[in-house]
Image: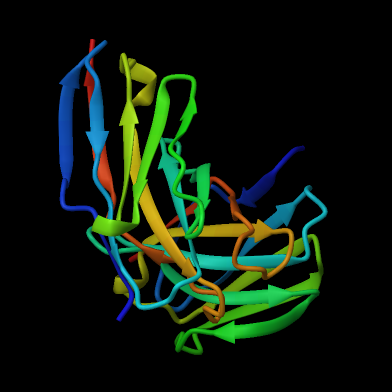
Length: 114
Length: 115
């Protein structure tokens, strides 16, 4: 595997389900990010991790719970979601948090909440 | 306030035409970084270029070129001799030096290249 991978690629869940999104980066990076991409809206940064420590939580509802067990893996645990949470969830990584570092993105998980 | 505007929601051209995607940004900072990303239908955002605020040299990479003009706060992207594989949504983004990790994204321009 190369770059940033995400699983699953598609997920349909009911509002009472619990599911998790997984992201893995094979780039040796120290920073990882979760973004939400909804139709007609700019990308929204949700969470930022640096060396497995959360450094940003962008006013995200508690029904989204991130976990970063090591610098290569990032999870997003989902619980009691709402239909408006349906979106493309993108994971990204960068060398570190320096502003000049580009972010490398995974292909995303297309989430549908029924 | 920091803001990135991509006024062109959608552009459609015929293959081999040249096309320019506009990006206008707002910031009071003197040091910042600008980025372009491509998002093909597969969903993955692909990094294209980074430019820092002190480097106004235009850049060319194959059929792609970028024109950075601080005087007009613009960072436009031109594809020469477009190809069907260039069809994607293109995003321009701004990051401040001490930006609390935020990239400020434009809304994106959907580019359709017709054969």
